[in-house]
Image 1: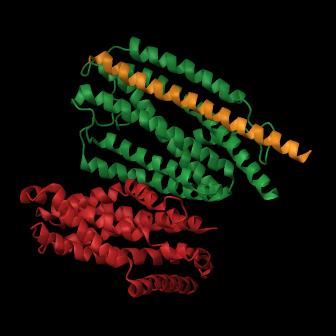
Image 2 (image 1 turned 180 degrees about the vertical axis):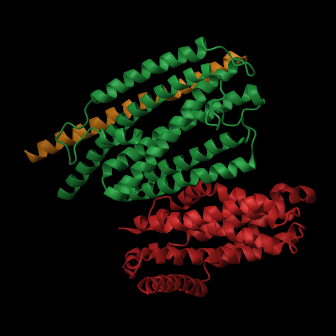
Image 3 (image 1 turned 90 degrees about the vertical axis):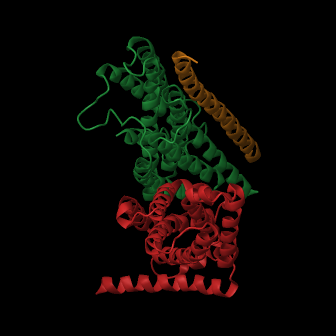
Length: 251
Length: 232
Length: 48
């Protein structure tokens, strides 16, 4: 659902657009950015000031309102990378590849935030900054896979080949996630079991769901805004590369 | 009938591909010799890194064994498309008639073969150097090693074909392959650990299932996407 | 560090990362656009 909207609203035409390329953020992007700022401010306020502290963990549990939405957004970003990569291999349209590489970069950003907040949350709860707990480990693996993806893109010599290799890696990497999940689960289980997605309904006090939902909506808005801007950058860069190549050929 | 003939064709071409790599290897002995010597060195170096305390070594032995397997395998994978790249005959490889899958499976079979050869040497040497009784549980260990090696080599062959065209290819292959093969590494090391401490195959059935599942998924997916890697 | 210290650290780091990324992205956009513009101007002159 999400990825479809993103793909179709890519704000440029099918063939090399006329001169001033992607000069300013599109109207959609500006609206999304504003909405993200608004929703995240509300979420921050509700999560930090309105909702009562957790009965067991106390105040520190408020980190969850940031930690959980940010990993869900990261997974969303990687799902977009996967879909865009499949579409690229199928249609051979470099615009899909621009979506893939942009979404991967932002996904890595959100994964990094998840790791940092998880580690900070771990210190007062478990007494250590890092523990090889199942889900933190899985997040770290995810981080390394997609950092690898970005490095692969940076090292590819020609854009077409880079796009193909990237798409292949994105597909393999995404299919690898459930296997990693199983492996890490069996290896280690210390984390509180996933409490929202558990069969039998949410066990988090329903009042906590409010800031979670607000922040999730805010981060998804922010993700979409960043994605549109990052795609714009990709578009400018590709146009530059194209022009340079043409000039070089002409002499 | 038609399908059967096609299947046989794929098999024959796969065999030709593997045979080519094995023949080259038998003549030049570049890869396997280096792998074997490297493996011996790794076992040697671990000893210095960890000290001679026998109990401590026994505790970390399964991990060390697999590190030796994987590093050695990585060395072999890095060279698996070397000949094609150096002689610039990727195009010729593409001109071979028939499906691209046979190129993939041919390369994969060669890589598994080379890695297994190295493992066959590492395992007894490891048993001797680290005072481990591996002989009773040899069949179980071999099964785990086989499943792990196939999984590692499947993704390894795919990524080696990809990184062969990159700048900094020596760095990129391990950088991409290790994170993707975490399930293989975890599964193989844990299963080996359980087997060495006396658990039978039934005690490690869930790890075997994980390894088998990994192998199956990527044996199906890799040849499908391999086509996009080779394309010029 | 008290509870609120950890909360501040977590939210602060996240905000820093997000805003930092946005600022860097805008910077990258600006320099990419400048480069393209220069290239286009240059090309126009050469053509004329």
